[in-house]
Structure formats: C-alpha cells, structure tokens
Image (cartoon, rainbow, N blue to C red; front, side):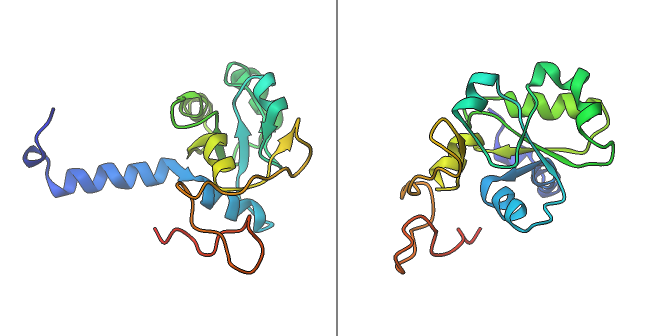
Length: 159
C-alpha cells in the first residue's frame, strides 16, 4: 500500500478533480432529470432483464455490448451521457462510459447505480409499475421530511 506521505497535495487534488469530472451521483442525476433541461442523456447499460425489472424514468436502454453498433443512431455526437448499471459492486457503468468515450462521447458514470437510486427513494419504472417508489433507506439517504411526504428527503446531503 502506498503511504500517504508519498503523495503530494497536487497529485491528490488532480486525482479528486478527475473523479469529479468523470463521475456523478444519483442525487445530482435526479436533480438534472427533474430540472426539465438535464443537459445529458442517461444510459442504462444493463441487460434486458435488469431494464425490465426496474429502470430510471427517462433513461435510454443501451447495453454495453451494443454501444459501438447502436450509440451513433441513438445519440448526437455532442450529447453528454451519464451511464449507470446495477450498483457500486458492479463496474458495468464504468465499462459503458469507457465504450462511449472511445466513440467520442463526453461520458460520466453515475456512482451507486440503480441500487442507490432506489435506496434514495427515487422513482423507477418496470415490473412494479411506472413511477414506483420505496421509502429512502434511512441509513443511506437524508432523513425524510416531517410534512407527511415520507418519500422526499428533508434536505440534501450537504456534501
């Protein structure tokens, strides 16, 4: 393991700046999608079974293996894209973002995948119906509001 003393502050800053440039989180994606003008296309890179089970409303289904063949017909060349897959234990969104980047798209990965989207209480379409929601997991998302809307967070995480 590299000792912390071998890293310079400039190297650490460059690393963290790069992560922020190429990754985003579910709260930021949700805010973008609900803004009415997200400025990106959200790509679900999972296989058909995952897409059918639950997907983020407004996402485009584009499995990683199909990106080289289908992306040019689905996406404008200047369209920024955000990819997601199952969750933090899956690198499918990373592989999809890499494939899209190799085709010239400005790509970012949504950290946490569909798992954290659901855990934060955001809606999904799929086998449970359109706009299905679960209460946010109190151990992974901000506490719910006290005004009776138990599915909406009281505040942003503050990060």
